[in-house]
Amino acid sequence: MMQAIYQAKGLSKQYGHKTALDNVSFEIFPGRLVGLLGPNGSGKTTLLKLSAGLLRPSAGHVFIGGQEPGVATKTITSYLPDRMALPVEMRVDDVVNLFADFYKDFDMVKASHMLADLKLDPRQRIGTMSKGTQEKMELCLTMSRAARLYLLDEPLGGVDPAAREYILNTILRNYSEEAAVVISTHLVEDVERMLDETLILKEGQVLAHRAVDELREESGMSLDEYFRHVFRV
Amino acid sequence: MEWNIEAGRPVYLQLVEQLELAIVTGALPAGSRVPPVRELAAQAGVNPNTMQRALQELESRGLMQSHRTAGRTVSAGPEQLDGLRRQRARALADSFWKQMQALGVSAEETAALLRAAAEKENV
Image (cartoon, rainbow over all chains, first blue to last red; front, side, top):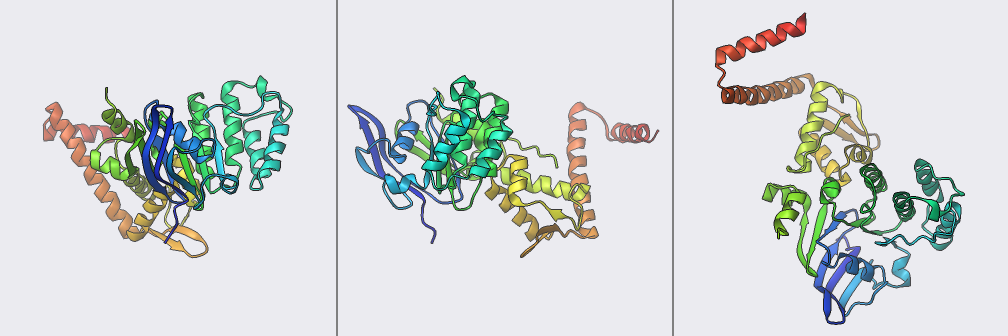
């Protein structure tokens, strides 16, 4: 039997009195593209930060490749944070070298191809790029690793529709049966064609974890319509 | 090949339909090699697992054949293609006739309009 690459068991996180995640459990298997959906404040970023080892759970566990987040899981997890985290004073080629030094699974050739697609000058400084270009660059670096789990926190938020298409295409072209990709986003319509599954959070709890085509067949709605229906105010 | 995936229906079914259409119209001719799953998935902007499932469905219908080392080819025979073509044509005719009825156009008039359209095409 195949083993889950990414798993949560009764995972909870509290910030003071505020509960951000409440007893979340799920299993995600290799080869799956998963949309992590939910309104603002539903716990998506907290879940991804816990999984990337940036936060500690208040209760419960998260496992990546069977281990709790730490040095070992970071070598197999490629995480794109919700805010651009590249050092603005560095140049494109410096950052590429930094990633190559840092991550054994970093594919220099793949990264160079992608950055050439974006028409980035290797000597350009990160700080002089537009926000959209910075985000595309960061995604390219994230996807240039041969990881087992990709955690992408809102990779589409700040970029124009053409750039969105480029980003989604990059994710699809890097698809591997060995790896799972988790994408958190509000732009349900843009991602729904490419997802296997959706994990929907509501107020820190799992509202649904379903195969997307199944959900479409049952509800007669697109994932986007379903989402609006469930969260109608 | 052109893809047009709508949001409301299962992607899998739409892929099966559009691949079938591509085979019938000759965009994917009989005997030709089918591009790799990953390539097709990226073209259509869909999940590779979904594309894989659609291709397997076409295999089980005998329209494609997978070879252990050489990928997939279109294996539909002339009779099967003809059957599919007729099936599609009937479905189109049914839906066209429903729309004409909704407009209040009679069967005779519809037939005459179709004939006229065909003649215009021939000039």
